[in-house]
Length: 446
Image (cartoon, rainbow, N blue to C red; front, side):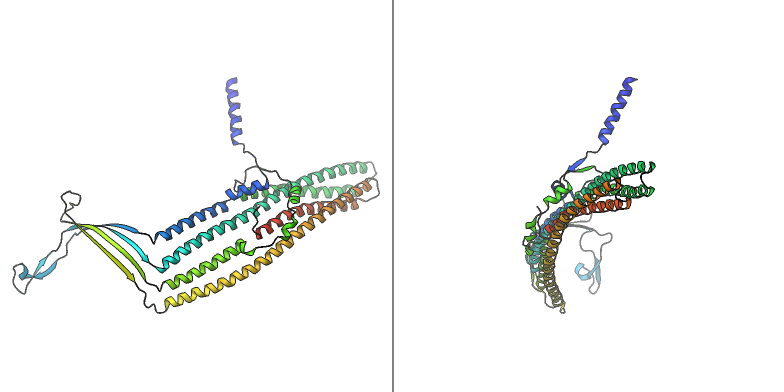
């Protein structure tokens, strides 16, 4: 009996150990590196590049030798009758005789080798395939930048939620202590009931905020997991601290960094669009050029009134031919001209879009620098405000228990402190996220 019980205990512990999920730990840089490999959008971007490479080869292969094989088997259920002059087979002149040409069954097995010698659209297609690969690579770069920014935002939100919970727990403990002491003073006639009620109101607000913060922490962690590409229920632990991370992300030199619009990924994508429109114009114009190709066809023919094509004695007649095919476009009722004009219009539009993107990116870079600079200034101000709010709250707490300040004044000081705490946390997060925004605009990935 003891052995059975011991076995059951061991099996239970084993099941618990297997089912227990390992907590994954990440620094911010580790999270970014992991996401660039495992984020679903990033993985699909890699697949898009591979697909573009395959498409490039697919386009190239159309101009290389092509070999097709064909086997054609025919079995006439009822053969066609033809009429010939009867005197050809010993009949009366002026009459016709019914004859059947050929055998009831036949097989035609052949192979054809084709080689494109010249086609303007093929040359344009090769250029287009190369551009398409560049578009896919630029899309991957754009995706990586967006993933990096999303990870930074998600990481910061988790840290914000954790710090918020710590502060609220500490505030709750202080309030509970104040409420307990005030309750005792009230019971002994040294304090008014209103003072107790004021503290109860503040405590209820803190408890509600704490419950909400705990729910938000769960959501923030799930969003972080989704962003880096792991199951949303996987336990995680972040090793960076919000305050330290904010300090590390204060880089004044970044505000003075010169923006190179040509290296911006959005500019590259817009430029790719213009190039693709140029190629479409070339394609339409190439359709007026002649197309030249050659071919070699060879095979065997077999004839029989019954299916004997698998027999060794079956006779096969071979054939072979070589040829050249030249196609010269002559007149399309001005259809090709209209298509070329339409493609030319799209090229002009793409040029305007490129100029517009360039101007927008300059404006976006200036705005991102301004926002980042403001976040640093705001962080420093909020830090000082928090220090002041803490001192004010401590003074009012002392005054309240010494009977100098009212409960209303204490509550005001506490509310001001709680607001300063949240403002400071948000200011730290803003420094991190605004820097990420600026780095995204400047195409900085480290």
